[in-house]
Length: 522
Image (cartoon, rainbow, N blue to C red; front, side):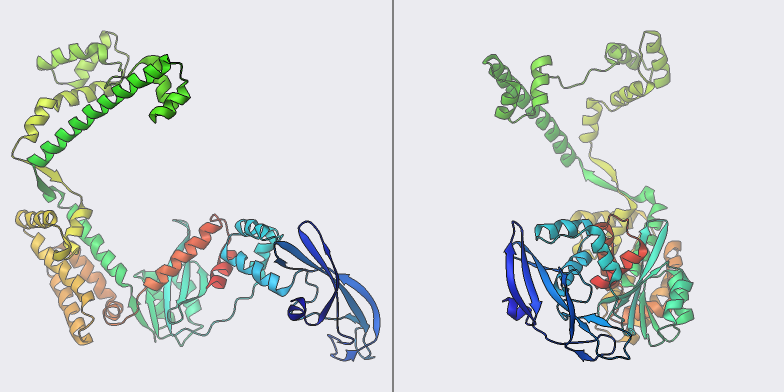
């Protein structure tokens, strides 16, 4: 086996230790080539030892103890007098570890954080420090990449809200080709000027990237990201619903509310019965001499709960409050018609109440929404429930087939109560349908897009008109998004991978180290 792996070496002996095997070996060569003048020499000047490490074998660390010949250089015009024989390709000059061990350690250093890699390698009987693993990553030479034809551009946060970088992706090869520190137009344009052969650039709708592409790559077709286009639509739609919050209400069945209320009462009663049953069992076991821990294990309870119950008894349905001594007085004043929290608070303060006014306010609120009043509201014909602008936005952006019956009734209720809701819905669905026209010819898609812009600009919905104007400013990129297969989804996936690598290093890696790891992992 050793002769196959190291054909130019002869193993003379070996020594077995508890966790390591030392192989004493020498080279089969009788002559060597001078590394400077390349002339062969067979005149040996002396010997010295090299002790490089190799990959472990059968959970034993392998170390070579090589007897290395040093030759005289026979070329009198050469600057070197002596030189050592070489063991390449499996061992580089001056190296303390074999090339295949370097490959193993370097791969783990790239795939994992340094400390995690150190821990994993120690389990594999490979001793190395995390600093050495980081040096491996830093010393790696990034292979040069060919100029991309289709480029993906997106930003990522080094420190959210503080500093950002830009990721550049060859979308045809699915390979990250560079990371830039910053997302300003000048930073990106300086990079783009180096690659005049770029034909297509997929980007989000950030103005800095648009400016950089217009300046440095006017020959390239810019493609706006489709997801960001739909996100921009949703943002403008949510703003419109924010200004019409009063209409975001829906009717809910009193029967459902009543059954839900009754279910709460049933659950509360069952819980009280179960607590009483457990309390009786715990008390009985305590009388039999059981310890608190054993009782808790027997009944499936925590030890602290068993201790508290046996010490203080089974708690009631309500925690004691500073307001308890004054409840009867407050109820009497409430029935007399006094409903002002400040006035009642000052009255019980004179009687010795030491709590905050908030307690009085909460109690009066509970009186205002008492059980009888609650039941009266529950048994009424219908109740109104409000919903958020985000929920309303989902009603308008999802297709009719994907909505439930209750969601459809919510949407129809909004149509009947708000005059501009139906036109707004039609415009939103009209824009979304542009992304579902892949089977149509490009001219038809572009014509439908222009028709949407005109309709939105002349509508009574200010937010959609503003959205249409923003599309008009970036019209060429949006048209390319609707007609070309490229989009920034692949770039977003690479950003997710970058975030994973950054978090592996607990977010403490410098930009240069992060760049090395991302490009090497690509």
